[in-house]
Image 1 (spheres, rainbow, N blue to C red):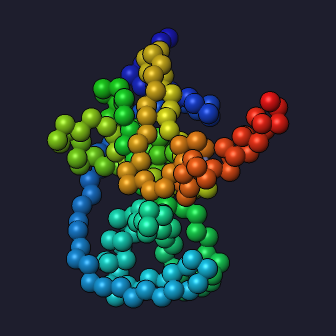
Image 2 (cartoon, rainbow, N blue to C red):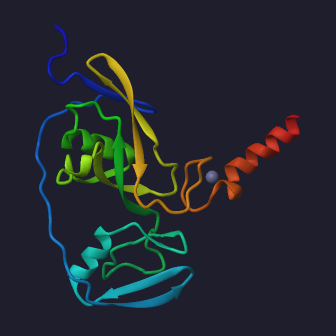
Length: 201
Ligand SMILES: [Zn+2]
């Protein structure tokens, strides 16, 4: 028997097969910003104290935020957290996915791609089709220490193609090693490679 309706799999760095099902997703809501108190804790850490929980949620939802083109990593502070030790290496981004085959603009595909890129958070089904939007849009939580995923190979009805990822509001980014926080003039991976090449030559 041939594969039936859902004959889709993705493949790039990892071997995994994706199966697609249709589910709608609706979300909305917008709140007014009311104020924040900021305390410098030193060691590049800041404590932001909001006066309204809706402001906090609005800021978290609006990430990524940058300062001087550097990414601001946010962590929702809990009472028991040590502000000097909370891990600061995850950030949420909106990701646009291009070259998605027609018929695959689905939340289920967004979830699988999101979990390939990082940790899937949200699917933007609301703006689909508006203003000639021709990409899939999803929100992903990413470990910023790792290189960003740039594309993923899809096998759909026996036909291979790539979907490409574009990260919205991406700040300082290295095109050489794919990591955030520096550009390719200051890339350790590139410099290491440069040394190697010199020694070999
Ligand atoms: Zn680099």
